[in-house]
Image (cartoon, rainbow, N blue to C red):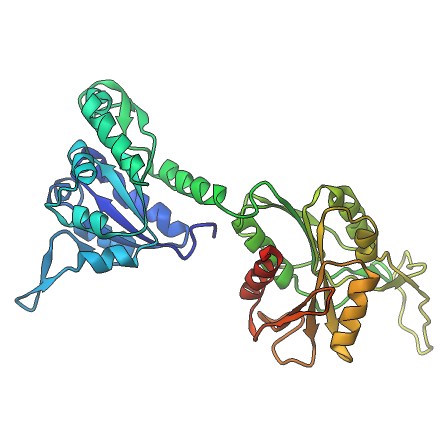
Length: 401
């Protein structure tokens, strides 16, 4: 899912031929993870049925100021509908509807919801070529913009009149793209690059066996998802994992296996980053001389000579210029003391402390319990929460003054 996930949207449909495309628009918005309610003008029901829209939206459709419940009229509260929404979309917005919106006329439920709502409204005009260019319609669109509404561009192509030109409602996929781009441009990390290391590293013993740990990459992938939704371009460097990126185009995944491989990718991208988060559980040791063939089991002891791996976090700390560098510490004993030492030794801007003594925290779980510690040792403790919520909390701390 992307930037629209979890948004509450009211779609207002007016009586233009483009209304036949609105079930597709609803479907495309649902794919983005939104909760959508549909309100219609009476005229729009000539082009698309409430049954179709209620089916694809998963919510009842309203088209009048009252509905009938067991033979009794029930008021459809337009104020409640408008207050519920994170934003409104009026699509298609006909010449008549645009004129009414611009001049405060209210003779149907769509207009009542619009005039009551306090949230942002997106307007997708839909009319014939000459109507769209008529000065009165252009003046009304200017009025709508002056009120703070966002007027979408119109499409160009064949029109219902037989003319060819500007005036078509944007296609549903383009409306969704417009919304995503609009919210993307408002995010605090637009234009920023975030580098995230994630997951375990595996160090080969022989072609079959390895040294590793139980890290799943769940925390790193959650951080990447939140950073992308905040507008950042994300470089995600992950060890072996089953986690998926969820089709976020602004996340560039680099899959590695060993600490040496992760180090080389970090070296390539670190200088370009604005924020670097080292959430990976990098193996501290590797086999000095891995066997090129499988080591056979015997009844005698086998000794493995271990040597330290690259200290990736120390490298990032030594090369730090303007980056915000965040480390992770997973501890079992003297948790806060060890985390505070790591802040100084690695030249960090902050560190996230996990304790394996906290139930539900640590490797391979869907939850985590974290503390955000700054160099002055001020600490923000968070309750047990999902790793996605942990990621949100982390970025709130990074972005706070």
